[in-house]
Every structure is written in C-alpha cells, then in structure tokens.
Length: 398
Ligand SMILES: [Zn+2]
Ligand SMILES: [Zn+2]
Image (cartoon, rainbow, N blue to C red; front, side):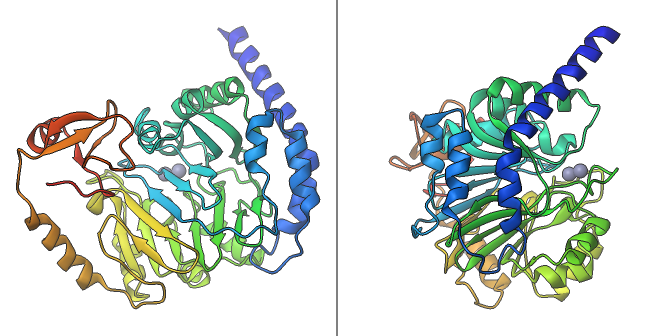
C-alpha cells in the first residue's frame, strides 16, 4: 500500500516536472508580455511559432497557430453550465478554439454538455484549484476529449479525485502547464486570454485559484474560481487590469470573496454566480448579493436560471438563457428580464408536440437545432418525464 502510494507520487512528480520543464521555454517568453494584459503590448509572432513547434501533436497545433495580425470576427459563446454546487464554464472562442474552466462536482454533466454541443476535443482546459466541486468532472473530460493544453495552479491536494485527475492528464497526453499570473494562453490583437492570478503560491486551495481574464475586442470576462479576499488584494497590488463586463463571482458568492475594493477594480455590468439550489454552505451570501445590487450589477444565478450563455461578437452581447437581448452599455434591465420570463412560460403548452433528444444530452430540441447532433424523436411530455429540459438555443415547446 505504502509502496503503491509512493510509486504514484513519484510518477506524479515525474509527469509534472516533465511537462513543466517541457513548456518552460515557451513560458519564459510569454510571461514577459502577459503582464499588463489589457495594455497595447507589441505582438511577437515568434512566440506562437515556438509554441507550435513544441507541440507534439501536429494536427492540433495547426489549429492553434493564430497569427497576431489576423483579425477575428466570429461569435464567442460562454456557457456558465448549471452544475449544481460547483463551477464549470465552457467557452466557444471566436477563433474556433475552445476552453473549459473547471469541470463541476459530478462525473459526467460537463462532458455530456460539451459533447452535446458537438465537440470531441477541447483546446484549453483549466482546473482553477484542486477542490472537488471544480475538478470532479475533469477526469471524464480528459478521458473522453482530446485536450491540447491543461493548466492548473502549482497546488497539490491529497484527495483521490485530484490523483485521478493527474492520471487522466498523463494518459491524455496533453501539455500540462502551471497557471500563474502573467502567463498568456492566447495573445493576439483581437483575442487575449491570460492569468491574473494566482500571483504567488498559497497554502489555501481557494486562494490558489487560477484567475482568468478573457478579452475579445470590446467584450471582457473575468473568471475567478474560488479566489478569496487575500488573493483579490494581491491581484490588485500586482497592478493587473481587472476590469471586465462579466464577473464570474468568486467562490459561489461566499462572503470570503468579492471584497468591495475588488468589485470596484473589476467594475462589471454582469455577475454570474454558479451555485447549487439550497446548498448547505449558504452560498451566495446576502452580503455579496447586497454589494452587487448596490453597484447596480445584473445578477445571474445558475440555481435560479440554469445555464447562462453569454454570447458576444466583440461589441454587443446577449444573454441567451433569459431570452433577453441586452446591448452592451445599456443600463441594467432586471424588470424586462422578468417580463420576458413570464412571457415564455405561458407562451406554449402543447405536450404532444414532436421534439428531439440525443442519447446522452439533458435537453430536448426542435428539429434542425445546431445543438442536436443525433436525433431521437420524442414528445414534449415524454422528454419532460425523463427529466429533459428545453434547449435554450432552439426554444422548443415547453
Ligand atoms: Zn474551492
Ligand atoms: Zn468551489
């Protein structure tokens, strides 16, 4: 037993040191321009080439070679997946790459959700920190998808699920990289993804959270994991530009995160809280909800509205889940959102209408929905009886 444990530990260290050393060349170069993320740093095409050359999988590296001068015009879709008490965000990037931040608390939910969107590979996977409500879905993701790069903070954990994740990283064959503030994931003129945290190593898991800033032209998002007050203070002190349209609220709305000074630094229009209904932690706390309201920030809670999909083109954005189109820079419109909800709830009642489902998905769809990859004919009442909910994209009868 002891021997097995030490063999696993040794293997883990070997794997991590190998991959860490393997990417160190690229890291030392990218880190210099990752700092000051939002400022107009000079682009260096050599960095992208270096990363491409180091990649052991030529088929994948082709898709990641992004010329910094090529303009990107696609739509970006950010799915704050309703995973219950935990965190998982899947991003369909406008350059056709994909990114998953955390895997939620259950084994299959996130993998199924991403498969349902039609993907069998994910370009970037980030484990913000080793707590089980963030990484439990990642072994399945690593086992089922081809992953190009895997990021996590340099923070060990002794749980079985953490060891399982390390095993899956090793067998996936992806490049594993330590997340640290200043490192870039993508650095082009139109699209920038970088770490603004952790700024150093912490003994606490939550404080160690990788904090990701994503900027697509005029739209920006900040994903904070479970970063706490201490980590927030350190990010501010390090001088990062933390401003973002959308804040994925830290630690499920716990009062140990979202200090007022941090909220001011981020200055978001929208706050998304990923949280389970009636969870035992009391998340989100009234303290955080009140603070967000005081700053007139629109709040979307996954326990109240389910999966939240933020879609943007670099200028305007919409929030799909609520079927409410909100233009960038428009004032918060909570009353309109409420009206729209009532409208959709009462609009259709045909339970015998034909709809379609997939083998493993949790949604039912209209024919021709882009999210419908394989179609099994069913009816609204049948679909609802096995626990499926209407797709937010094609809006089938309810
Ligand atoms: Zn945590
Ligand atoms: Zn958490």
